[in-house]
Every structure is written in structure tokens, then in C-alpha cells.
Length: 117
Image (cartoon, rainbow, N blue to C red; front, side, top):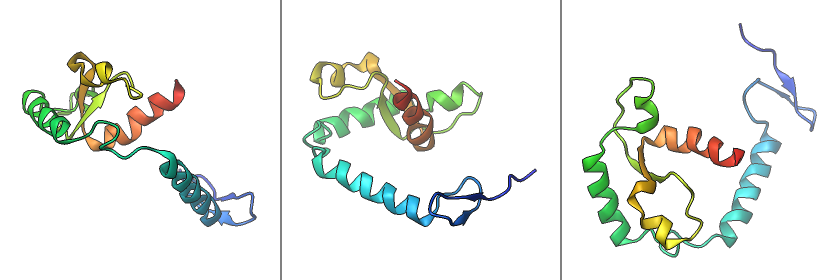
């Protein structure tokens, strides 16, 4: 059964589960402010050396760990840091802290887990 539409704080009627235009605009602005202060991927350590190690790890661990918990074997495309490294190079390169994930799991399940911390 479909949930009824909701009324956004700006007064627009919005399909349940979707964002209003004002919410999307606020989200884009918030992300732009965050990106303006965030170091580049290369500055955070995701350089040629990382790409090479990532490729080797994905060859050895080809399936998404989250999907495998549901007995679904999806190819992994992301090497995720189980414990966020937050710039700690030792933790960044510690392979026991890596896990293979597919992009949907990395971008949804993992992000939800990190926001909960």
C-alpha cells in the first residue's frame, strides 16, 4: 500500500519518500560547503599506489561482503575501510581494515552505519 504524499515545510506537496525541490537545493548547498573544505582524493591517500592495492585486493576478494550475508554474490567494486581511517595512514593501509563492497552497499548501508557512529 502506497503512503500518501506529505507536505514539505515550504508548503509543497511531495510524493512520500522523495525530496522537495527546496530540500534538494539545501542538500546540494550543504554538499558544496562540505566539498569546499574537504581535501582532494589524492590528498586523502587515494593515489596510484592505492589504486594498485585496491585492484589486487578486489582480485583476491571479488564479492561484496554485505550482499554475501544475504547469500547474494554481487561483484565488489569498492574497497572500504571497515573502521574509518580519518587520515590515519597506518589504519588506511592496514589490510585487515579493508572489506570488499559493491557500490550500492558502500553508498547506502555503509554510509548509514557511519552516520550512526
